[in-house]
Length: 168
Image (cartoon, rainbow, N blue to C red; front, side, top):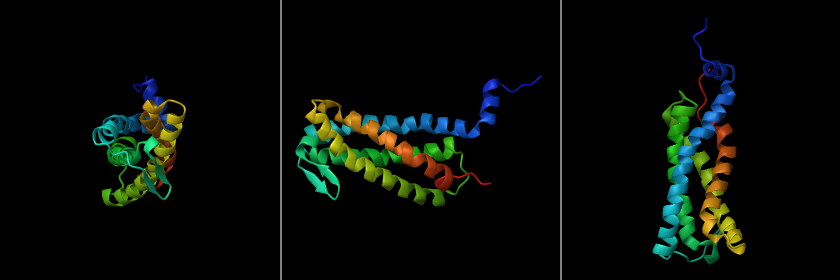
């Protein structure tokens, strides 16, 4: 008689699928961080501190209707913190990587910069669109949803095969 549970057996038979499920499930820790910080920092920077001056740099397009420099700062600060949390979650709990911290950290910084670039420009367009259809109050939430999906699409393969691979 086997002492292995059905779930344990399933995990052993489908390790890559289980890893992807863990990646998505445990990524929600950084998603919660992302949402909470955006919900706190957006009103703090935009309404509280009045940081609504337009901010335009390269493809970043934060005009006043999109929340200006306040939304930009809230988004960038939020994403840096969310990515820091996510690094430790992914390395230790999802991929259970034995890669050296020094080797994984600089690669993750590059990944995070890519994600931060994406998450930095998208919210200005999402906010402008949300305001144009009367959903301005939901723009931070819509931006967080977009950034979460984009981060998943970019991060999983890079983490699995480049940043946090298991030794063979």
